[in-house]
Length: 193
Length: 152
Image (cartoon, rainbow over all chains, first blue to last red; front, side, top):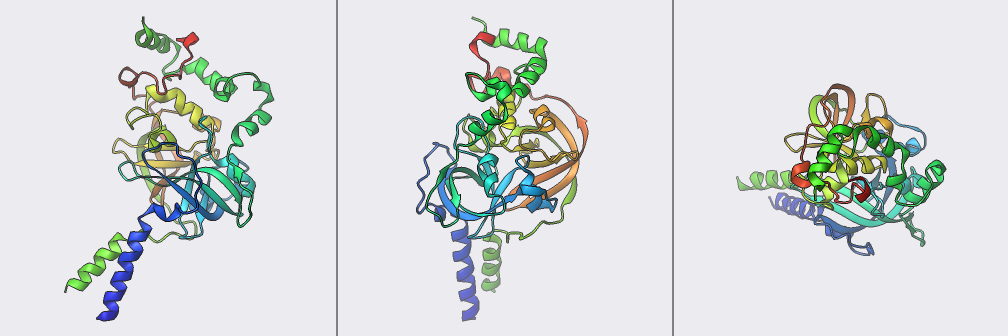
């Protein structure tokens, strides 16, 4: 009887600890993005190809940048979905993680947890380094990598204004996605003086 | 008799044990809108009704091209993170996923759950309804700078 009660108490303690994201806050130097659902989190884990990890369909070098990546967290085995890097420029996290495909890393950033929306184990990475090393790399490589990969779209202004892929879609479907004719009508309606 | 009840409650409160390897999926048919999951989950640009549809279409393209994960949002509010579409595994800004931004589709595919998130491999787009969520009159453009002043 006593053994059972101890087991129950241990289970309660484990479940409470597991439900609280602040267990990863200690030691974090992440910068707030002032998001409702954010909490600082630094942890270690292995960089994985999400499609491979979830479905078993694997690719060389985690997909070489065309597949979403995640971090298999050492602490609890949870697969953390890395959504963002640390640039407020509509940029994901893959470029930051890819150099560490299959490797153990330390990361620092923001976890998103919003039960109402179903956000759990989602992450914005701000700093990354090989596990156990001293020097952090700031997770802002996306735009430099994009510029290097697309010299044909070089110029001034944000990348998303210069992307030929996006310009091509905008030229066809417009800003609202409904075609140029509807786009003109909607703009006239929304922006009429 | 209370102990088994407590024990059951304790087990129920525990998070699901993490899967340690790829798992079997489950075939499903699901209808939903391709959304930019960062804006949706983070609330960085407003509530969930504002970061979908025509109002958010341009931003959805930016985020998709920028490699932010894309999800399928069902009318019930479930989100399935998209891993592949009809054999195309480029889910970091590839042509297929970019061209479907804000579109509502019915998909036949394989569903997986991992650590609280839903994932889907879309095997076939059964129907592509295009962009049906016209919410621009409610929200304008989200973000407000989506259309440069010179193009308004």
